[in-house]
Image: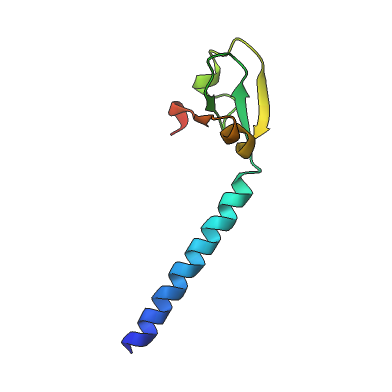
Length: 79
């Protein structure tokens, strides 16, 4: 009986970790918004985010993967 529960628990853990990896890969293709300003260091999920209001240059749509490769982090207003 305890062996069945252990096997079931292991299967659940494996399935959850696999689904997280798939979701992470899908999220990398998600569109985010960045300001091209010299001091800009964040990306934003919402194009109307409070953090983008101070942007004095253009706002660009990029993939999450691209934003993270450029060293951008999630905006503090959206955390």
